[in-house]
Image (tube, rainbow, N blue to C red; front, side, top):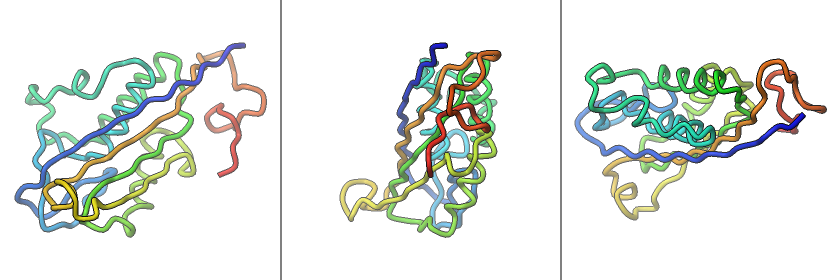
Length: 182
């Protein structure tokens, strides 16, 4: 049996605007500003969607959820992520793992990391150990360092394993991917 591994990367950025919270990983996090966006502006989930779509060769988030369509105004990005997972499943792909780095001077994210990971793991039907989220600042440099907005970079590993092929030898039972110590 031939199993193909594919990797994709994603990036999203949003400027700050008036508001009292930001949404990251499906969590509403108190902040002195909000984000300017068509949907909920969740840069973490948007970057993950792009990474997964890219890995599968299915375009990007703008193709599937264009900001020119009113129906996506204020939309919950967790719905976007679940839809992307379903698209991948329909094409015979399984998600192996995802990794993301949020770039922001504020808000501080440490207290919210576990909840963000749990949300993403639930939406992607993964063990939490297969979801990693990091955060860093801009060290006072550029638009991130000046507190003008926030961004996220994400990477995803998927494998092609159509229904009926079963997991590879040594695969973990939850996703059919290589068992890797975490």
